[in-house]
Image (tube, rainbow, N blue to C red; front, side, top):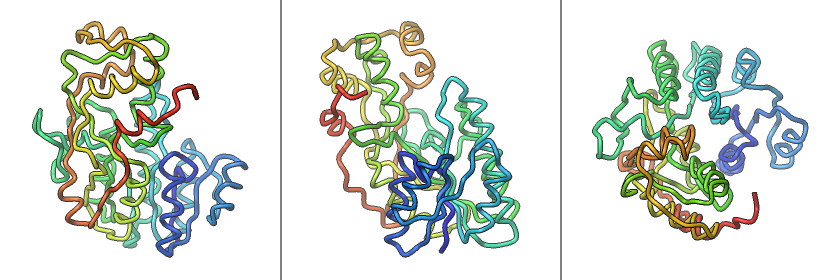
Amino acid sequence: MRVFLTGATGFIGSRIVPELLAAGHQVLGLTRSDAGARALEAAGAEAFHGTLEDPDGLAAGAAQADAVIHTAFDHDFANFVANCAKDARVITALGQALKGSDRPLVITSGTGMGNAVPGQPATEDAFVADNPNPRVLSEKTGAELLEAGINVSVVRLPQVHDTEKQGLVTPYIEITREKRLAAYVGEGRNRWPAAHVLDVAKLYVLALDAAEPGARYHASDEEGVAARDIAEAVGTGLGVPVASLTAEQAQAHFGWLGLFAGIDMPSSSAWTRQRLGWRPSGPGMIADLRAMDYSVR
């Protein structure tokens, strides 16, 4: 298939490109820059110039493809609500470009959208439509497209990591570096699911090839990594003390990240593994945090 891939030069998307090519697909990769276009062409993909601010332009890319994987997202968390709304507009445009066909659209969400029971792992069969996380709008939009007959499925992400980036842990590291304190909330028992970026890239391709309308897949290798363990690994890496904060102190310490810092959001991927045969094999979150070079910013 010819696959239109948004976020093709990003952290996850750049790993999806070689997985798609190895599976025999052609890749039309979204980029906003000439440098990105050169990187895509060097990798064996075709470049498509566009931005998230131009949904109609992205729809033109989708119209040229047999399938779409949407991983691009504006990670400016200072404007998180607006960026979630922008993502919904992009998903709508991509879906409309595929309307009237069975061409698959794989969109991206977070595993927290399946945390239906507090303290229990999120599951693929659950969707918490009233989740306070604004990113829920991505899945709501996908559900609307599904009802309109568009072949939409969802890959829900945990904290995706290697030794350079680790999802929400990356801004946590920068806050720790700035405040000179590796903090966690309360006893630090709240958990964040995680998976290595190469394993996540493989899952997107499996989801695309399955092309199962309405399916939700969890890209979680580790069901939950304790916040205190993350803090201790980062504290050791940066050579700063590790300490517990109250919920009130955490808001001031973490800023926008305080919205997530104390949340327990474990995630199961049992159904995903059974359905797609996904077998993650990469290193765990703590191993990558211990292996990273903290002198590089």
